[in-house]
Length: 148
Image (cartoon, rainbow, N blue to C red):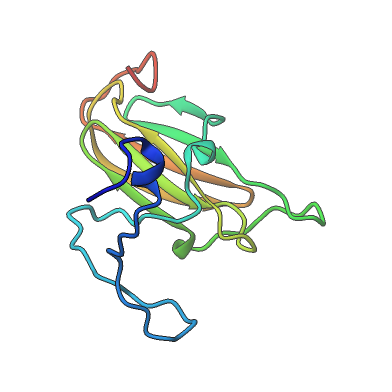
């Protein structure tokens, strides 16, 4: 028979539902799950790491997004390699995860879910101090905005 009907008794009831401890201090993998998403999940990516400061330019056949990078403590521009970003795009959306500082495991994300028009290709160019995201338009013409 259980004592009392308040939450105190339920909260302090001894229920062991986790895996049995094997005596090792090192962490162990409890289980794996299959992921349908090709985008990697970065542990240090949270809502505050979403990029909001970027610029863009419009051309007849393409739009270019400019993302500035942080400087090192010495004031030098950070140089990225292809391992420092992950690009995903569809015909009407684009997202890029960028490790803006190679010395920190902090990833930043720029995600545009509804582009102004459709695109047929998306490429990344790495320049000193910035990342350029080149969006090739499906139909030539001006875009009054980058996103809807």
